[in-house]
Image 1 (cartoon, rainbow, N blue to C red):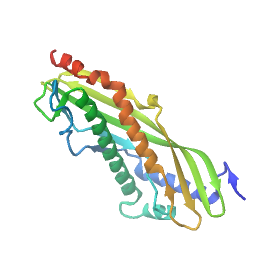
Image 2 (cartoon, rainbow, N blue to C red):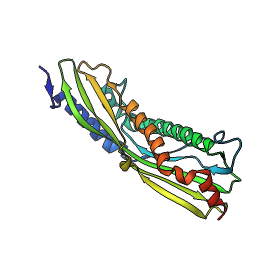
Image 3 (cartoon, rainbow, N blue to C red):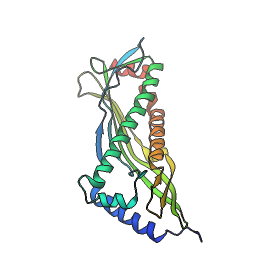
Image 4 (cartoon, rainbow, N blue to C red):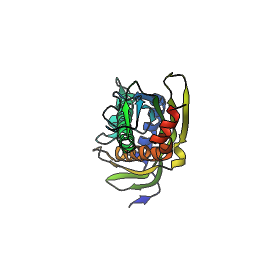
Amino acid sequence: MSQRNTRHPLLASTVFCLSLALTAVLSPMVNAKASASWLGYGSEDPVIRLAVTPVEIHIDAPTPMTGNNLELLLALSGSEGGLGGLREKASREFSLYLDQQVQERFGEFFEDERVHLVDSRAPLTLHTKFDIAIRQKILDIFSSKDFDLEKGTMTAYGTFRYRLQGTSGALVLKEGTVDLSELKLRARYSTRAPKDGGVVEDTTREATERLLADMAEEVLDEIEDALEADSLLELARR
């Protein structure tokens, strides 16, 4: 007979152990920087040129478990790399995904604004930085004779910071911060764990990527006034 809102003992003990392992081994956040600049984005008929630095990203997010048996993941905690390696790999992949989303959305915005993006020799330089924590909240547990199903939400917290500097480098002309929690970014996830030790079906990755894509768009909405061509020209004339 199925039970709702009660964690199955097997799932409870397994997830609890996994949580402890993650907390002990993986608590530091991963710092990732984009490997490429934004060259190729922006207007070919510019009103102003803007130098852009790689997006700096610090991200702490749940580790997707798709395709991995929970017991196998626990066993990995004692192997070389182990759960720490899985977590770092996931964080690097999420950082690269967010970087791509930011470049795409900001690049399209700058193209519309006739702002040409370069890596140097511009009157202004844009620096951007994300400090992100994504947390899961369990909403429901369903247990049957064949599998345990967990459903919940993922919520984004942290900050986004930007600053616009003049040609001297040390001169900050404008800067700002966006509180990511105020954007109320959420996505649903589910984890289905077979009781026969089969493959875990987990939508954590998809949910995280939806959050990051929404984050790139919402952050731009928050700061776009400061990045419009007219605003940049005004700063550059100071």
